Amino acid sequence: MRHRMAVVLIAGALWALAASGAAPAQAEDKAALIKQRQGLMKQQAADLKAIQNYVSGGTDQDTAIAKVTEMMTLPPQIVALFPPGTSTAEFPGATHAKPDIWQQWDRFRDVPSVLLRAEQRLAEAIKNGSKQDVLDQVDAVGRSGCGACHTYFRAPLDD
Ligand code: HEC
Image 1 (cartoon, rainbow, N blue to C red):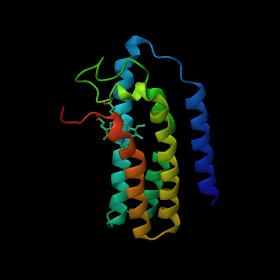
Image 2: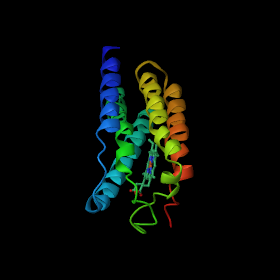
Image 3: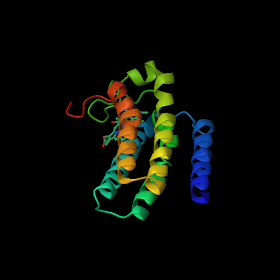
């Protein structure tokens, strides 16, 4: 319980930081930010995979807790990694970020907090639930967090 509180507090602090500290990106920083956000996305995918691995018996509960704890630090960082001028229009071939992100910014900006809440439920399931609970919450993270954003805002990866 104390552990969970600490995680929530850290996530909250990062959230506040991301909301207040996002300075407009310089043009030369944009390509680096694109790489950075792709790295963050890959990290999320790897963490989620490790948690699925826990469900199938490949790793232990402590590992799954470490992975979900790491995951929860990531959503608050997402929005700051998407400055205007970093879509497929400006960086064709280097990014899959659709221009729709900035046309529907309010909608885009809200998804990471939905993702974080789903991850908090996932953390709870890993700590106190059954493997089936964990699986259900992994699906919820994928659907309401990752998928909800990709469906609208990410261009197909085979483009
Ligand atoms: C707020 C929107 C949003 C959320 C939430 C989100 N993604 Fe993404 N994701 C994107 C966008 C946009 C891209 C394309 C980024 C680019 O190419 O610059 C992307 C790209 C990716 C990539 C490809 C990275 C690469 O190497 O090019 C992976 C993998 C990925 N996301 C996994 C995830 C997973 C797993 C989650 C949930 C845990 C998630 N994403 C949540 C918007 C989101």
